Image (cartoon, rainbow, N blue to C red; front, top):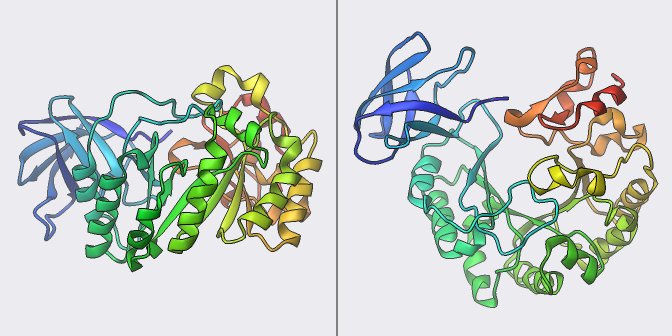
Length: 358
């Protein structure tokens, strides 16, 4: 697994954001590499000297890091060579999804200023993810970050994971600004049935509130990716959900159907929540058929391509982020490996036995 947090030393008094480079760039937040020996990289910048432990085979050139001198660590916020950079802006959430891979916490560490600095240093045409917790619990700070960054870096784009519970009529005019066409909101709907959706997110009235938010987002011309995690609770109702999405939410850009991640709450509830789509593909296949027939752009996430019948394989995306992706040994000769997301690093290893190289 690719390390995102590395040991670091610095005499700076406070945390700072810097871009690592072999030579000093034109920004005062750039740091120049002075030496790299014994797995310790020494840098010089406006904050003075600092070190970062560099694991063998890890290239830090161009990375944008948040160095915390008191904690003795450097967090790789944006990796220059990766298409999978996501900023965790909060761990607070107002839902308690039964399968949440990032269980919420009550505390909040406000790092929006650091994240803004990091985004402004990002490589050209980067797509930066934002997640939580629930980012829109801090909607004012979030929108200020987006407007500041996109005002100065219109080449960038953002993909934001949100439960969609906090959009109001008062947000519509603001979200109509041109910069928000560079923002896509990834919002989950787990069932067409209000009771079922609300039970999955452990919040009464959640789907009804979400439908109000969709009205505001539609009025604002917002770009929306709909996301559905497949669970034993909703799997056999996916065809109904497909019809709901096509008739009630036809304005979405695409619908992502996602296999379960064995992390967070799902880890201890795996046997109760996980549904093996290979054993019974029919509900998923019917949902795909409905979606395609009704003109939806539908995608499959977190699903190895070899586990999907050939006629649906074009919908299976390489969706798992590089830092938490693994492939089974049997994947080595597969001709479609580069197009495949493989498995989460922590996915049960017994799934490896089902791999059939394409």
